[in-house]
Length: 302
Ligand code: ADP
Ligand code: MG
Image 1 (spheres, rainbow, N blue to C red):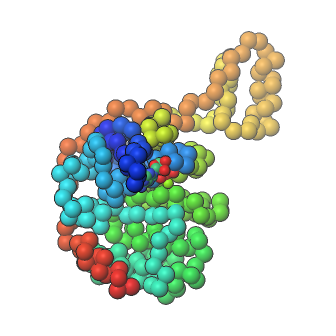
Image 2: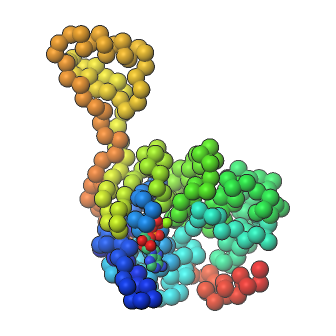
Image 3: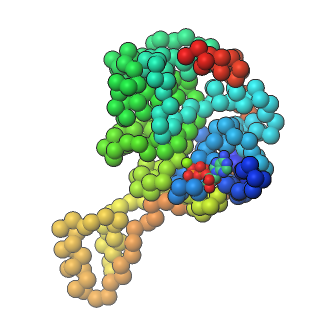
């Protein structure tokens, strides 16, 4: 479980002008499920995701991941957290062009000092890319590149997948395929997706955190009681959030000929996030991975 408490991020530019990209943001994230961070461009979504991923310095406030408070992290704790606990997926895929699909994924394991070809093949199969291991990124479509990026994130068996506009460069059919892969992954892991696409969020999210100008304006979870049924009950008619069928329409018309009737809408698809019970168990991060210095050295070699 991840707790974000009163998180604020202030950027300062060269002229010492400061800009508050995140303003006193608090929320909790569960251990599994698909969470959308929804908001317009410039609202602070990437800033928030980067903070969750330990990629950027916190100005004030706290993040606690499975009992590990960022305020207690040393540089090597951040390295361990990023390399073992988190899998990143970006809008522009961020694959290394002169490495094959296999090597791109292998790199993520090398960072954890692991060698496991079987796992790499299994992960490729998991994202529907079996047989693609010898291809280079330039020989792949956008959707295929993003699948490789997802495989690279998954191969580390991270607890948390952070994806920044992962379908931003893809057409809608390919986007759906990618979101379905994330949905499947989210049954066992926590997947946090940054998006400006409200429809995707409504269709796929278990939880939506909507931000505007660095502040949370909505924090909701999918309502288990939501049903999209057309119901006529005595003189109350419940309308679903979709087009009525011909049969439903004729029943509706018949009913409203009788008087009086009350028409209501369906139960809300999402409801306010209730106060979450915090889990105080502390999970320690694996620390056999490479230091940032050896990582940088390794990337020079490529
Ligand atoms: P989003 O991902 O929602 O489009 P960002 O989190 O990237 O938004 O940015 C939020 C705000 O913070 C924007 O106004 C952006 O210009 C500003 N910002 C982001 N990164 C920096 C930075 N490194 N330095 C200064 N301002 C930044
Ligand atoms: Mg962004």
